[in-house]
Image (cartoon, one colour):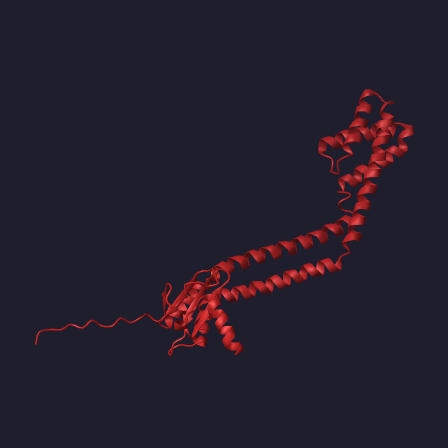
Length: 267
């Protein structure tokens, strides 16, 4: 009773009349199409499915391979996220940047303060350097020439010894790529690069799976398999005038034989 009810509901949904029974219904979700394949005394559902699988197997094998790659990439992302304490890494990196900025700001302010006590040339160099410290970049050759001139001028002044040491230390760190080369920032950069790489891999594999899904062409495989069983596409043969499914439904059945015409000759 339950089986009969289920068959009846499927007939209504796909719009299949009794004329097509027994049959197999194949639905392609990717292409939004359905196929009603007649089961004859010379064919079976098993034969149909085997032929369909044979025709799509080259693509399904690639899909299986990509699904394995996708699972591995997601595992890598999970490992990356569980291995690192992202909150701690970001807090440490932010602290290093903040301390470095505060240190440079103090040096820059001291340079501005002593500019008023210097000659025009010295004052200009002090103000230039106070502005240049805003950028975390190594000095160019021309900038180093100006920096050495400023260091030389500060070296001749007895009251500038402490500032001279601070400025030398600051310029050395700038030249060495500080603060980007600080351990806190390098660890954060490495962790970020790892996660970015896994995210890119996941996106790439998903895109490849989408392409393979379009190449799968289940519709073409069903039609080709049915033709090998001697079945041909019929537009609406055996379909009811109304059905719940709004997707196109194609019937694949044995061609109808036409009765031979009889010719009568004179005796």
